[in-house]
Structures are given as C-alpha cells and as structure tokens.
Image 1 (tube, rainbow, N blue to C red):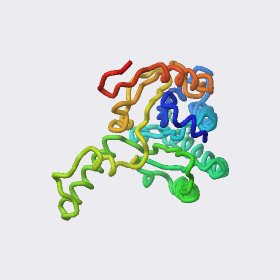
Image 2: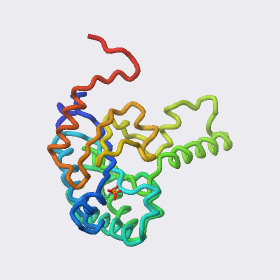
Image 3: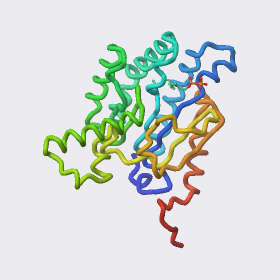
Length: 243
Ligand code: FPP
C-alpha cells in the first residue's frame, strides 16, 4: 500500500459498492441468472485487485441483502456456492496482501458451510494491516442501527453508560463498521439510483457515482472513471470551500 496514495485526499480511502445487474447481464445473453452471478464474482476479483493496486485501503461490497432471502432457493444456493468459492480461492491472496476480511450483516443466517469458511478467513486475516475487505452479507442498515440502539439501551440500563454522554461517536462505535472510516465514495451499477438499505449512517457524507453498466461488466476502466470524477468533486462536508 502506498502511503503517498493514502495521503492524497483525492483518492478515496474507502469505496463501497452496490453490485447490481448480474441478473440483467445474464438475461441479455440468454443465460441463467446464476451465470450472471458467476460473472459478477469475476468482477469482484478484478475490483479487489484494482483497489489494492491503486492504494484504496478499504473496500466494502454489498454481496447479499436481508431482502435477497426472498429470491428462489436455487439462486440463493448458487450465490452461497460462489461465496464459498471466493473464500476458498482468495484466502492466500488476502494473507499475502495483508488485507483483513470483515463481515457485516447477519452471517449467522448463512448456511453452515459458508459460515465455517467465513469464520476461518476472518480469523486468519485478522492481523492484516494494509486494508480491509468488508462483505455485507444478509445485511440491512436499519437492522444494524436498531441493534446499536438496543445495545446502548442495554448498557444504559445496566448502568455502564450514562445516556447523557451518548453522541454520534458512541453510536458509531456500536455499528458493525466500528473502527472503519466512513466510505468516501459509493458506487452503484446497472442504472439504479437508490441505497437499498445499505450503510445509511456511514454514507452520510459520501459521494455517489452511478453507471448504467451491469456489475459483471465493471472493470478497471470503469473504476478509474469513478475515481477521476471523485477527484474532481469538491467535498465541503456542509462547510464552505476556501480558495
Ligand atoms: C445484484 O444483481 C447482485 C447480487 C444480489 C449479488 C452480488 C453477488 C456477486 C457479485 C457474486 C458473488 C460475490 C461475492 C463477494 C462472493 P441482481 O441479481 O439483483 O441483478 P438484477 O437486478 O439485474 O436482477
């Protein structure tokens, strides 16, 4: 990881991606949806690699939402199979590159064989200091915020937390993203322009970037386009820009 790159505020420290359009990509080619997800996995590999090369330290991918459980069982099985494949194949790379795997969401709802692999990769990469790959799995932002509120209430009830001291940082520390910087840039593919219950708290000041490309077509060039536009935007965080 290049420290120079990290010091350059025109490069996002943390990129979050809503990977959309696997199904449409497959449909356009007369293929089953599972083939779209498989091609989506190849795009995940390319993107993880490109972010590492560019010096983007933190990448968060929305891989499975709480709403995705409503999909047909066959499609869910195919997605879980790809996740297992990813975890088996990527462990070595993550370790070599010093990247820590982090999971947000409800991994306890995932099939046993996926959980076992997730636990293993999370444990083995825990010492990674170069960056973080966060997978949002069975994730929903409102549920995450509600859980943090519940935890604050329990601590206050137990007398370990004075409610008068609760501020933004107190709540942020109880989110599953505690310790990670907020994403600077959020990307969504396939022409949709909504957040879909993704990181509602953490994206408060993020720049949004959308593309009509379906996720399986997302490549380095697309990422470079998003980063170039991010670099041109002026982030004021509600303040004014000084010349
Ligand atoms: C959205 O496309 C994508 C998903 C619901 C799953 C994302 C999964 C992958 C990219 C592959 C596996 C990833 C990992 C990290 C192992 P969609 O099916 O909603 O597309 P559609 O809107 O065109 O139907």
